[in-house]
Length: 330
Image (tube, rainbow, N blue to C red; front, side):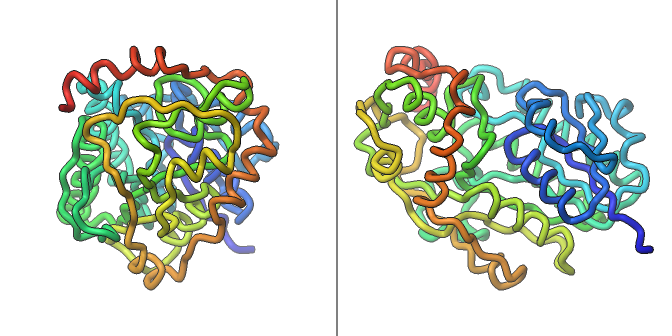
């Protein structure tokens, strides 16, 4: 009988983390989740009734508290961290403690016991306002706000630990991820969470600017398949963009979701376009996205009840929530 693969997922109760945990369990892994449940939800994992899953309520800010869980782990998937632009502008220290020092703690715990590969959840926000489309992994790094900078710093730590200590890694730069369990509370953020809460409450969809701006969306099922492929592949010490590889306008998303819409002021420091070059990941990992935007949104609309308790953002609430953004990112 072959030995079960042991995987550890930080942030495993979150949107992306819980979907990854589902896949790992499906593939027969023993999975340990480390999560402080600041944004993750126990409900995201409650359907997994199996002894192959261990959930630990712990914060990665304490190396001493997390270290013991890394014994005999094959793969570490480091997804824990703080997201969102505005809170990072208002409280940059908190973001560096989580996304940089937290990453350092996870790296050090991994180094102590050894592992097959370290997978880091990086962010395409590191590119800032790209001038190259599609945007390659070699494109200029120019983060526009503390969240983006802290995620890039985390990636630099991972690279350095590989260089100095020989730790095999893959860093995956996520573009715009959407799908089931995307966050329903907290700061004003990702377009799908905002739109779906507005839709279920019969409120107009708030479109930033003229809505012609594009993003490169990737459905979470496709993302986690790519993450797992990166882990079990023979590739190491690589950086990959992971995205849908297509530009989708905010106007198209609002059209597919349906309902009334209202336009609000464009925010400084946000790109007009986003389009990833995904040739590298396709070639190296034989991976490609399977879900088009209509299929993805259709699956979300079938589960729209998930967003019934989410905060509903109105133009006035958005104006108050993004005050620091307009003040500082001119």
